[in-house]
Image (cartoon, rainbow, N blue to C red; front, side):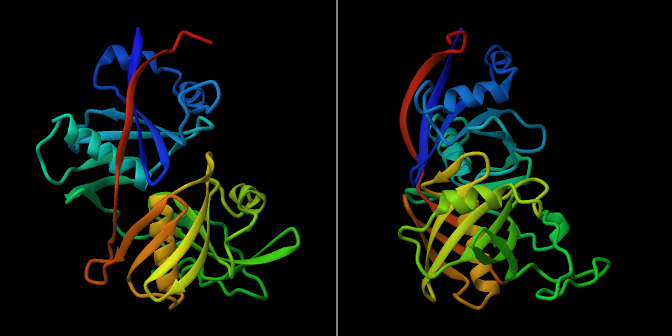
Length: 295
């Protein structure tokens, strides 16, 4: 059978979404890692950064699974969940203005915000072993006793990559991020450095890497190397992690605009509940059907 799909994007971070509530469709996706690599391929497939799968859930309104272009499964995707929510609303699968979506990162709650989608991304995780990141004591960086109930966040940890030493700030938004502040983004070798940092031994589950320039107290610019997908035009969890890192370093206000290659996201790290809120667009591009038997 041919599998129906929907192509969507959030600020150019693009997705193939498949509704797997039909068991016949779900059975076609048994070897899901291989399917993801094939569908996301930009020459031999539909072309996307990630594959999104919609399932029923016993604990939330729906469940979302996310697979990278390299076939690896990941915990959470900020742009993806906005597209996922738009798909649900546009097809009348739920009339709730706020949804609960089960992910590997927990229950995430997108809600309508005019023409955009606002997502409660939850609390940022700053404890090194929960990000996870293997931080060791060094002469340049003091690590708090891991038995402490409030271990130090990883801020400006020195990491030498090739000819440069970067200072990384590590945050999890349900998935791991290494945020690096730089003086200039235009012409920066995101692929050269990002691909090495992604797989550095510090990160047991690999990591997303954000390169960030502060514009002013209410705006930052960001380019991102996504784990398993390469450089993408936008990353919602990355924008959230970068905003948290900027606040931790005292560089910005708690409410700011993150300008990515594909456009702007509005991020707020709410002091009252410690949750990060992300607001941005979600766009449907086209629908189609694909035969998974073809080579």
